[in-house]
Length: 204
Image (cartoon, rainbow, N blue to C red; front, side, top):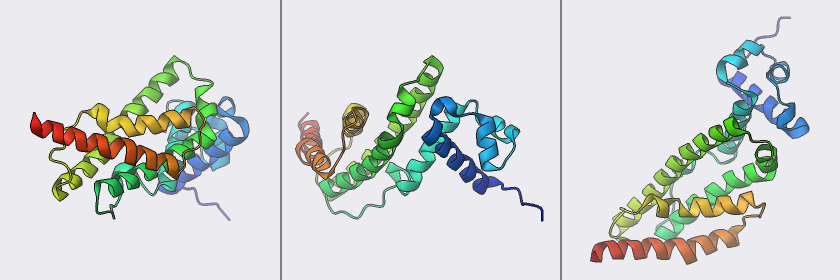
């Protein structure tokens, strides 16, 4: 009986799964397109056409895992709260899932072997992630303004990105991010900062 060749989403999932399994057992140094093709049951040209290097493929596979475990992107949260604090808690907890997924499995794998070209790829991904992070905070701030909790959403991108950079720092230093850190971030830093920035903007 002839085995049906996988295509489209099914094939992509198989490629990503094979990639993650090789990363887990052999690390980035052991990841090659031929190995992935064999494990995923596809041909090497299929993979060569899609990704420039095993490193780019590995990042795509990790991003796929993060998105799956996080039920989508951070800026796609379906809000259920009734306050600035509750919305921020939702976004931060969603982001923590992403960071913990990456940190527990891949911090050492990637950052111990970066060369200049791979560093450029990482920088591009961080830039794309920052755009998503800013959009996530924009959605929170717009809801807060509608409720009358703040008077403006015209905050600097540095202030919008502050919570994400703070959480990334803890992941990259191999610290566990629990609910206590998220509550500290939201209650002691973010809510006061956003409310203060909003009132300061109104006075100016």
